[in-house]
Image (cartoon, helix red, strand yellow):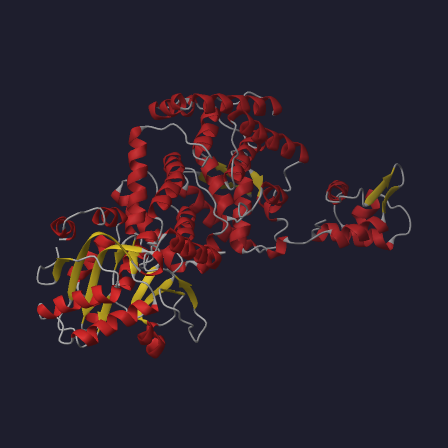
Length: 495
Length: 142
């Protein structure tokens, strides 16, 4: 329950009264009109979740339900004061964007933020710049604000503002929903049903964060048609040749998109323009699915080039990573990323901060490569920090897998002959092991420290290292049985 | 390819005594001016064998010695006409005897490494023990 000064004054008066008091009397005491009293009573009651705080009785006036008031006052969480200026601006901008092109009263917009007129003016000027950067216009007239511009720009602005405002900094759809109090449980259930329908009809699972992406896209779509007014512009509704081609390449996806948009239209009791089918399709093809999507050769080539560019450009610091697996893994990510770049879709990476603190060097490298890639491959958009963060995770994963090689000593009585032969055989059978040296037993016992940390000694002669280093005894033939012994040791060590 | 100055071949006569075979090969190394003391060299070889068999592949033995009695890295390969009964119930057809003045001389010798790489290959070792003539063994290892 959020109260402004006028409303708080009204409550204070009612608290002092033991009986009902008329609106007329209240207006006299507060020196306002009865209309203002009615409005304030209604808005106080609307903000209460447990029922009317101010009770009315015909012919008698108003009375405070004290128990309910105390309950509401204690349970309401006043978090509006915690917003930073950026969060505040983003929230107000979002409200304006959702309601575009309708205008909203400045005082109502700022009601809960308790900021001065100077701050509001400053906000408006900054929001104006933000709107312009999206190709939109922020109008300020008679203390009313509105945003106008083409629908795709409005959606893009909403998406970007949501991402920036950390509203998308969510690990699950539930978190996302929690942050949107405006979202009713009907809407929530309806939208989740659409996601499930999408997964079912395409026989796939939409992984995080793409499920949130589609969910928020549909949520924005619904809000735009409900709160704002989407201008039906025939120019914007016509598919370009590229857009048509994308639709034709993904017939099954396009069909499901059309079905879902149709359902949303019926849910909103309106007919959504056909271009909405395409907007949704764009999201669908930009996800990373478990299964490969059909694509053109040209796209594939760009994807391959980008993957090689990243993997070649990355400095692994001499660590031996499984390059083939990394390339395959990264390819599955870069492919939909290229789609996202083409379609102007952004993904939020809620791990970005953690990635930055855990893998600062890797992230910096990937960011650098991303910016070089944009120029080199003339990409349609910049690869965002969020995207670079995802790519960094792939490199981090493979770098972690490439644990430092195990350090091996090969030993025989003399360090010559059979042990040298075993070295050749060990390196052939276990290319991941780092054979530090071939040593004679005497040489090792005298200068064990010279070899640094050793994980295993493979020896043809009996030896008991003083420091307890593992030993595997093998025959000079280094037979299959000997190989198995070494393999068993590696397995035990790794587990 | 192993420098011929480092890799030598000989045929061995059947013998019941491994000591006798080692003795014969040591004398050959002495003749080639690769060791300066047959008895001392032989002692090193036998001591090494006592620490553990140097059987590197079926029917292939690699006795080796490191010491100042050796003047230069040398590999002497000897072939028996047929498989010989050896210690511990094993049989030997080919003996690859290695002599080196010190371990680092052996470990940094590229020609020796090339030979060992061949001997690490099971296909090569199988072929080696199937040969009848020294010249055929020589072809496989050079």
